[in-house]
Image 1 (tube, one colour):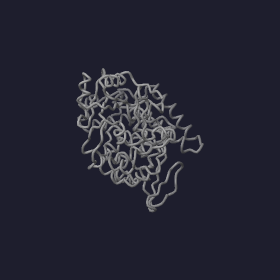
Image 2 (spheres, helix red, strand yellow):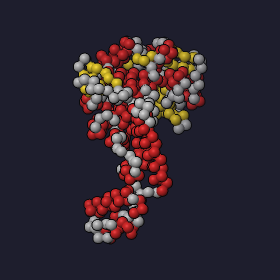
Image 3 (tube, one colour):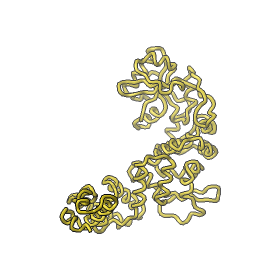
Image 4 (cartoon, one colour):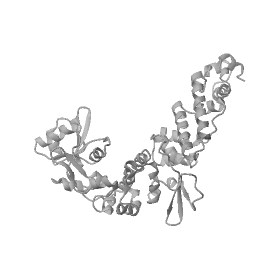
Length: 424
């Protein structure tokens, strides 16, 4: 098997080899190239010690030198080069207390999480696969390197990574690995909310966002956040909507997880909104705040969840009203979001889809005609209102809001003369 390595990474391997050191690309980039996916980055592992790497290359950055990692700069790109190592104890359930450098590539690969991430490659040696990673890729399996309980005890984040990889690749989690996830789930208390959020977001953006039900099934959900855990928890199945999935925990509680249509665009706020659409908007916001998502994403999710059932049309007034409450791109996302849900939930009934298609046509007409849908394009501004005799302050804003409402109802009213005449 031959893997095409980018020229800068190949140059790093060659220079290390020319100086008497072993060097390989390793991990996710090898996995992705075998699967025909575009690697996000190219990690390199080497027998050279960090100081030796720095002697070989002119431009380096000590990004994690205590753990053996030096970033080698090739033009404007950085490539992480890490010395073969053996990890020490993981007292905090997340990070090794110490690392020991080793001359053995096999020892380095042995410490990695899953077999499909424990392969190395260079053009001279070819593929190094000590733990059956290729077989697991062929079978579509996520399996730990060595003993699953050991790998997950070392770093609890790996249990969420296993689910995320299964969603991204469409793979099945091997039985012993899956049971170890259930057993180690309480160790998620050691993982920061930010890291949990990153993994959940990647999972939701994957081709299989419905795999998020495994976060509940395996017992991880209580450690995401209390609200996340309880939001879809029921004492019975409660009667299911089309496409919903049920997982039962300990024979007592059901988790009724709404299906997430894969046709919802893989955009962060849209996939999170699809997952949270069955809960009240304030609970959706609380979950996202617990996970430390950025305010822009939180606000967009709140809007999509809040407006998912708003009656758009058949008149342009209701459509202009909705458009006035959000940015144009978010309104377009709302239409896409609702269309995706309609395609999944209407069971072949085209009425809702036809209504949304008609709404989209009216939106195009509203934009083509230049209808005013915001204060930015209102024919009068705050200074005009003050000059007309309204006292500066809160009353100015209220007056502008009333005038905008008039214009949303009838765009032809958007003239300075008309609006000032109807200011009272």
